[in-house]
Length: 357
Ligand code: ATP
Ligand code: MG
Image (cartoon, rainbow, N blue to C red; front, side, top):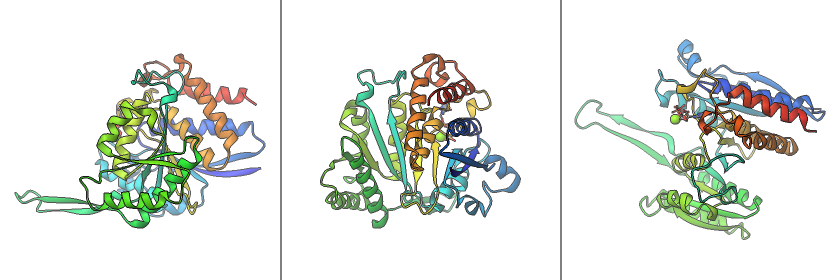
């Protein structure tokens, strides 16, 4: 029997509700399996840890995670700690420390979900957004001078390396190639940003030559937002920079019905380090502790985690259970217009998993 070592990091806010729910689903799955089981280790890092220790996670935190097969993450964010401290102190520390350079965000309209685009059915919106996750606009390079003076100034330097751009584009082409439509849209802003974005376009054309069976096109990020709304069916796999894809994937999640549904994988495609899976929503302090959090984004992240482990059949079973649950409006949480609780949705999924072979 295979044993997978899974780290769970609930973090802050509703992360503390949805990550235990995700673990419950994995446990229910393992219960009926003779092929694998999970060994969980929970890490209580985040805002509470910060208040006690002055840091979001310990110095040797990455070493504790290094030998895990995967990480299930909740959210980092605390109303009393600046956002850039929580983000850089935990989530980005792990993403960058483990060079999880590909952020993968599938988006579909799940059965039973009342999505805002009325002209658009599930067959018209089936995307996967690939976000560059290691450099670009979020390189962290920059500075602030003359604070409080009339000449105050600040910079955030966007760093795009040939190595970084080439590897994310190659990852995106490969992913597009593995999907039925073999269709890739490369998003930049190369009309206005005439250095790094022009390099992206050039490298895209170079990498495309390695994938003659993939149909690809280019889109400017501003035009892309309109195309996602007006012509969703023309898109399949999408690749963009760290900042652009961050914004586009929130739009994608909203178009698919709710931020509470969307999953993410922070992937190290070379598998040198563990990859990390998380819902795309944040800590949502407005609803924490009330049992209102939609756990579906975390369950879908669990599906991605299982796929990454190579457990494709188990992944498909969880996805099927998720879709059975979303199809039942009585099991919709408040963000979907329903009144079901996190626990009710979780129990329903676990029951589905127990009932299926
Ligand atoms: P952070 O600062 O950590 O990014 P946030 O509160 O700014 O968190 P999100 O958590 O991403 O932002 O969510 C924005 C809003 O969407 C929340 O205030 C919440 O009402 C709603 N929301 C997000 N995730 C969920 C969920 N899983 N279930 C229900 N509602 C959600
Ligand atoms: Mg937020």
